[in-house]
Image 1 (cartoon, rainbow, N blue to C red):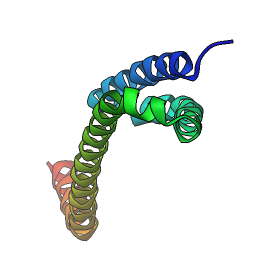
Image 2: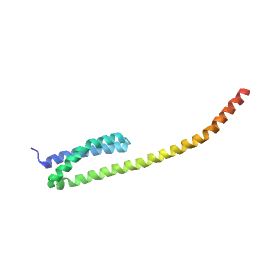
Image 3: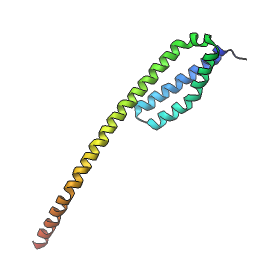
Image 4: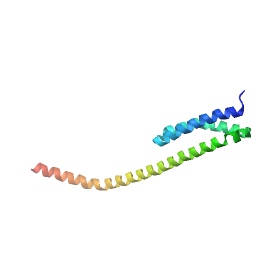
Length: 122
């Protein structure tokens, strides 16, 4: 049977791999894949947490690596928040442009209709 420290080592290695993949997808702007990777990572994180609660030696031995992972996940979350703010602004700008277009569309429709009559008379 494996020791809890060996199991924690394997779990942390897998979690680090998933966090790195998540980071790559977040930076690439593929939030769906980033969320899928985070979902695959969730059971491993739960298992590591349970292992740390049952064996304090795991917490002591893996503390720095866990802290680094938490910092990396925070960076991912900050990047996603900035992206969400940017996209929200883009949606607002598009909505404003769409409203202007709807207000101006009848004017352009009348202008096009008059020019068509003028061309027919020539």
